[in-house]
Each structure stands twice: as C-alpha cells, then as structure tokens.
Image (spheres, rainbow, N blue to C red):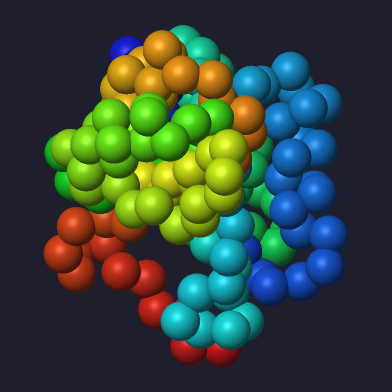
Length: 169
C-alpha cells in the first residue's frame, strides 16, 4: 500500500443496489477508489466490501463516517497493514513464441504463478499475492507484450479473531 492509501472493510446487508450506493457516495463526494471488491460472507445475509482509497487523514476520516451512515452498512473499519492480510489475483496473457515460453514460465515460477492457458501465440499466467508482488511481476514482464490483463482488486481480512463481527438478527 502507498502511504496515502487505506483499506476499509465494509460489512453490508446483502441487498440489491448496495454496492452502487456505496460507490455513488464516493463519486458524489469526489473520493477516489483505487480498488473495490465485494462478495458474500460466511453469513449469506452479509456482503463484505473491501475498498482501497487514497487521500489525506481528513478525507479518510470523512469516508469512514459517511459510509458508516448509509442504511445498509453494518460495520466499517480500516484493515491496518500490520493487523491484516491483503491479497489480489492477476491474470496476465503474454505473447510468447515457442522460443520465449521457457523464460516467461521461469518468471512465473519465481513468483509462484501458474500457467493456466497455453495457445500457439500466448501464455496466460495467474499470480496471487499482495499488490506489490503483482506490480513487481508485471514490471519483470515489461520486456514481453502483455496482450490482456485482469486484476481483481484487493481483498483483505483482519488477522486472528479479535475483529470478527457476528450479527444476531
């Protein structure tokens, strides 16, 4: 994470339009979203939204307060780097002729990436890890033609059981 970025975990009611309302709040207020992911939790009534955003400390405080006021929001808190685990998935399609494949595969192996598709002209690589790892891998691939790239955005959870939230209703 960059110095001016924070990761927020938002637990919301699993209802239609909730992600749109949260993204709309960011848009209306002019807050930047670096990354956003959403998915149902172990409790199917609840969706976990992970947002990476940037700005100064006043903006971060305003984001947390204003998102927390939305109707469907059950909880919002920062996932601090030293108390959390972040991961991202990237799928990268690289042009690779037969004589280049061995080098691309070796790079993927260094980053514990998996070759998930092979064609006559390209390889598709899956890499998971923190954003820095993904960025470093992409930098090493700069000598090759990246045909397509898909990144999921950051997903994160707090370490241990201290911040686990249960809803009774």
